[in-house]
Image 1 (cartoon, rainbow, N blue to C red):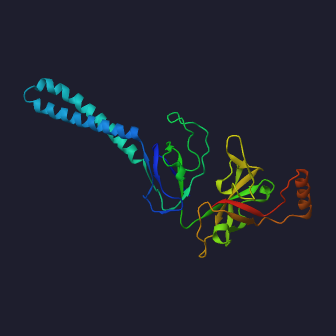
Image 2: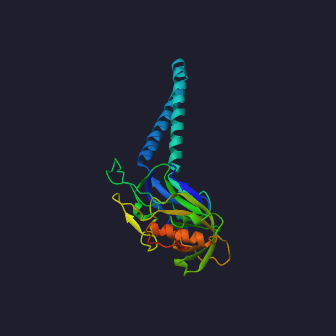
Image 3: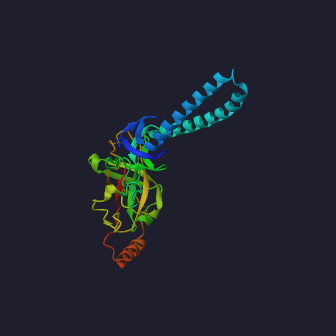
Amino acid sequence: MQRVFVAQSGKLQWSIPVGTQVQVGEVLGRLENLELERDIVKLTGEVTLLEQQIQNLEARRTRERDQVDALIPTAQERLSKKREELKQRQSDAAKLVIKAPTAGRVLAAPEVHSNEVDPRTHLVAWTGTALDTSNAGATLSTGTEYCWIAPSDRFEATLAIDENMIEFITSGQRVTMLLEHAGLQPVSGLVVDVAEGDVSVAPRELLQHPSFPTKVGTDGVARPVTTAYFARVAIDQTDNLPDFVPRGIGQATVEAAPQSIAARLARFIWQTDRKSTRLNSSHIPLSRM
């Protein structure tokens, strides 16, 4: 998975739709930075003026050599500095066009949730993902995660796992997934890793999913009702894979190691003591593809 970041801050003018297949160097988005544009216009004028001044000084050399020879080095040094500034600004402007560093399918980066207010517009900063159509015109800062590019021949899924089940999930376990958008066609994979920290913000795709209850806090951010963890699954590469929809959802079954009767009884008592309303189940919601 290739992560793509904003290299130069600007106002988002256009972004590529999620799911688009791209090649190396293809445009993913365009930003606008009026301050940068003004700097380029100003520096271009200053460079042109200094070039003209040096030409005039060269023309006066035959008549005022002593005076002109003392002025030309200073003018040339100023011209060199201005050209370097202009070159840097033009390089920054080129970064306003975000291009694909690798070939693959465009995926949305993790959502951004913020209550910060832009000091210039006095409006709440953008939320969601940079590729959301609702964020057209939003100002993206340098370093903002713009999108992901997934290799066309490799796919991953993220499982959202209840805390009561996380102890049974480890790397290397086989997983069978049923994707809602693929007519519940089974897809197999392997658990790659399990996140150490719990889920702090509910994935947008699971906000209305019955198997992943959420609650909106006073800050307007939806969070899981019970503690949950993410696990990453590498999907097996076969010839009959369905057409994946980025951030699609479904159900997953993890092949956990068998437990002894004593272990199962202890687990049942532990869950009863916690007054858990969710019994041990191997069906785990997929947060995204």
